[in-house]
Amino acid sequence: MISAANPKALVVPIWSGEGRAIAQWQPSLDAHCLIVGGQDIDRAVTIGELVTRFVDAGYRVWVGGGNRVAGAQTWPPRSGDESAVYATSLHDQTDMLRAAHEEMINRYQASTGGERLRPPLMVVITDFSVLEGSLETIAELAQLARAVRIHLLIGNASPPVELLVGDLRDCIRVRVPMDAAAALSPLLRD
Image 1 (spheres, rainbow, N blue to C red):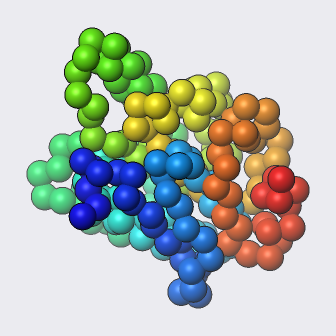
Image 2: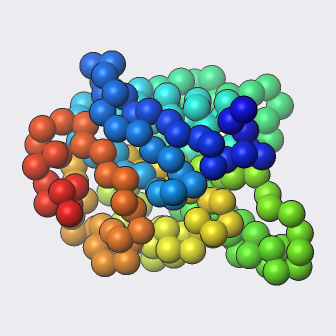
């Protein structure tokens, strides 16, 4: 059974807006994922489907990005799910990233104290380009969070070549193009 207790078994298909599988993602092997290009609605549906998969598998899910996730109007996904965070404004999204960074630090401290691993956390950023001011926090999360079961799912309308550089780029190995233009980007081919 796939659950938060057994996150290594989770492999999720990534579907295009046309309903065809275009990739798959196993967060235990590749901690973070970037979904780029396509129509906003297609990206929203794809991210929404992934969020549903992670919630069903017992992950805590924090979503930043306004109404850019299909199904957002029914958030949180489970009645009484206090672990769900839904940040719409830029200020709230920035606060969400800071909270994820604090959670990462707390998880590191707990793990050195012999505490059991906490349930996996999926941090969803639906529009990477609007969070340019938080690049340092996102980069640190991408580099260090995997070890404490925190994963990033990042969406963006176009390949953020000037934003996704260096170590941040190296930490996001699953890069999924939603259209032909995104597929031709050097960012997704390397």
